Amino acid sequence: MKTAYLKAHSTKDAFTQLQQEFGGSLTTHYKEYILEVDGPLGKGSIKGVPLKDGMSYLEFNMVFFTNVELTIATPDKHPIFFTYCSEGNFSHSFGKQTAKHQLESFQTGILTSKQALDNVLYFSAHTPTKVTLIAVQTFSLPGYTNTQSLKNKLRETFFENSTNTEFVYIGSHNLQIAEKINQLQAITQKGLVRSLLIQGLVHVILALEIQQHSDDAKLKAKQTGSLTFSEMKTIKAVSDYVNEHSDTQITITDLYTEFGLSPSKLQEGFKLMHGHTVAEYIKEVRIKKAEVLLKSTDMNISQVVYTIGLTSRSYFSKIFKEKYNCSPKDYKISQRNTSISA
Image (tube, rainbow, N blue to C red; front, side, top):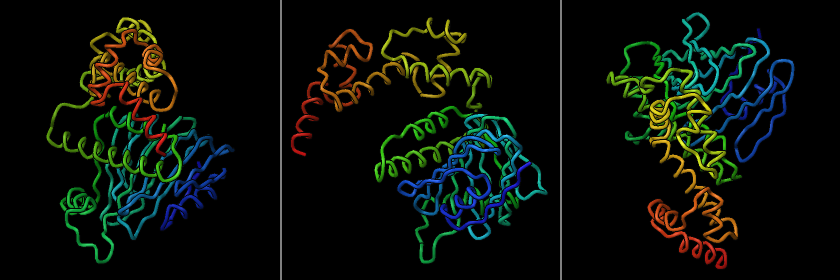
């Protein structure tokens, strides 16, 4: 068992302490902290980004080689933690004397303590685990009086209006958040652009978690529908497959044969994760790839059509214009003109 204790007033201090506890190599890129761990305690990475308005983002992508108990002390901030488990599982408690609450893969959690008790995270040994925590400081800075701020709304919803000393919500399984986290991890831009993209996606993830809580509070149907946990994992694998093979002819029959899910389960899963049918999602992936090719390569329209797995240039032009309100030809010309003027 490895026990670690963090008491820091900044992301920088937190990662300095994490490196002291777990070892590894710590790098910083435009306020993004990345701790790469490869030692006797575990292997993987821990990332953190301080955001505006008292928010921060923390991501664990680790396999620990022993059980880990990580205590995060925030006595002066009273944060609300919005958590999500993308893979594996982990548990949480307020201090070490209260009950543990476990989150499984694809589950959300909202956690806060009026008494500012320590937040304790428990990770199991030899279990690949991906966990994200969005922390929102609940107290406004001196002189900050905007009652419509996100911070005040969250405090009213999950802190002041709760009659309990601690607020614990473990939500339904949600595949849409997993997709947004994948997008977050796939950002390749650097510097300010990367920082802005991260902040934007973190706000989207936060909105999805709040919406999940609202849906569950209203006793609506669970977001997982009739899908089992195993089927949800398969849907994610199918989505990854579609992204990697979108330039080939993919049919429902192909996916059913490859992954063993019925057409109805595939459609239900894709509606859940992407808000699209399988065919709509494949089209969406292809159009996005085409936009990148038109913008960043010298390919002509016919070459782009072939590269993304289509055969009809007229069909491609139709769906591209539906998506971007611009023909592929005009888009290509505009990109060329922009490059020349730059």
